[in-house]
Length: 521
Image 1: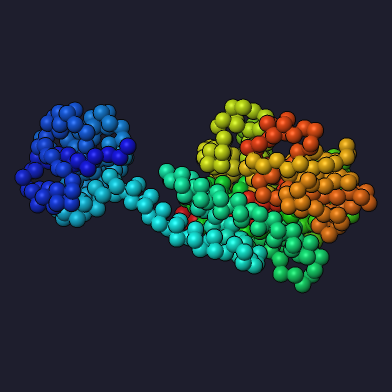
Image 2: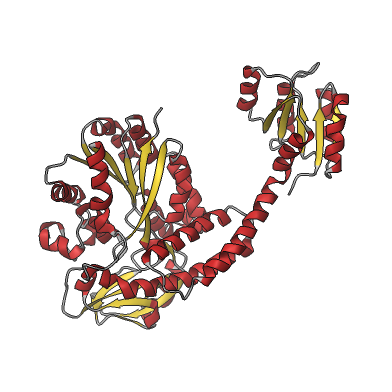
């Protein structure tokens, strides 16, 4: 509920404020005055106020003493100190007490109006501006549908939609949020067609104009930083979406200059394929051919067991020399504590320190199986909020701070995102078909609705190892998840509303990669 447009001004020289009071009343505010703290508290007990203006130097209770009493009555009351005191200690005390604003007399009426308007009507004004801005951009974004977009256009569009999702998610505008969701649904369908038409060409035509892919992270992003600085911290946060990156970026910006670029995950957008591609610089088929001992088609659980070795091999290929690599994977808080003890020594040496953090991926998977997690991370805004809460107290943030203290540049990215799935898509398959919900390998595999999935008959065109001659790959598009006709109700009840990955959607494919440069001082 908005606060009333009623101001209480507490000042022992209140008669000198007549011009300011009259000006505020002319702007639609009701203004009452008190010459001391005791009278002010009596007035506050009688009726509500929107904001309190108070002097610091008054007989009886001083301003900061009165401030404490006011906050005891109303914890959220905006309080502005308007005082003659220019002493640094008074200013620091006011800031430390979390005074809403601080003005030094003499003040003109418009100064007071500006502060009061911001405190009482700022949220409403910002929300109105947000609504106007989105309405304008919505028409422009909607108009881009049906237009042939390049991969650069897609990056620009997807990033903007993620930013709007974050901004509208924190505003009380259900109508605008629903309009955005409708637009995002249409964009997902268009993006699926775009990738289905272009992905194989990117991989098989050397002259194709393609986006950076997972396999390019080492050559295009990691090597230049390593060559310039001699050392770099590489951080891969498993399953980080663009909107989640948007909510942790401001925290990182407090200690780093942040330069964000974007790349496309390889397909399928699942950890065994996408993260191995980052650490090896190879597509899965190339990886299996060059390092068969580190690839097993039938055991996806062990496919990411050799990321350190793969990074060493990739860096040797890229630089022509042996680059020292320190690699750690963090699953638990205990892992984080061990990491933070070893990290200073690792960052003090030349080479690459590579860290993988699995919390967000564990969260997105765990909420499907755990009712408590599901309630805490019920929807996309809740998942963003939980991501920020985790990050603020995470070993990841501590690791970044350690890098900042040691002036070590950081390359932070992810291997894939996730999509909030609501739509079941029926598939027909044999028993040996893989169990994944957003992608499936299998013989005689097909989707009941051809529009629900990208079908790949020749796995090699997608850079994937061959299986049996009749093995096909299905990649779910939009917000779909695969179900079998015989288990339709079971899968719908279990996985509708789950955050999944492995398929083709902007949220899974278009990913941030950020260079974090520690700020001097």
